Image 1: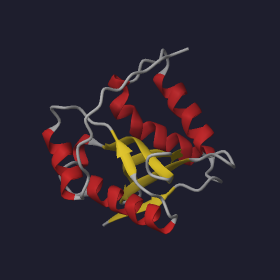
Image 2: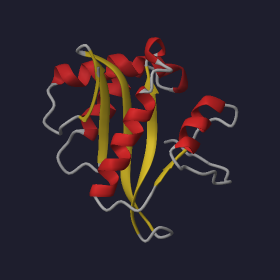
Image 3: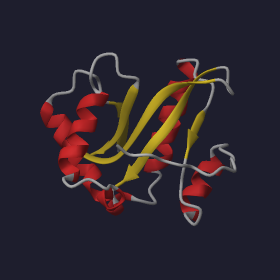
Image 4: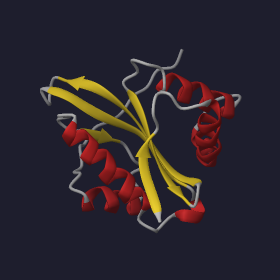
Length: 151
């Protein structure tokens, strides 16, 4: 059985390391010199009191098998708070079992209870499985070109 829950702001360092260990499976998308250190730093910042970032995890048999990381921002377009879903990751050995869907449904339920006005995210244009998942839950395409800047 898979449990999905939010990591509390009071999470200890062992829990933070468990999350970083899981997310190391997607380090190919990170540009950091030391990806593990960067993950731990980001997790630590997320769990600081007052942070508008959140981490939800999926756990199976006491093992973290999936995680979602998002920020709550304010949208002029939506007229209130919205979620930017930065990351949704399921360990490769646990994919195609509905875990990503469970994570997303938990986030949607949380967002509705928090009076969040919408959720936005980005995925690869050729990632058909992920696009099918999002579409099955009512997400729709927004045509845009995303830009970035690093310091």
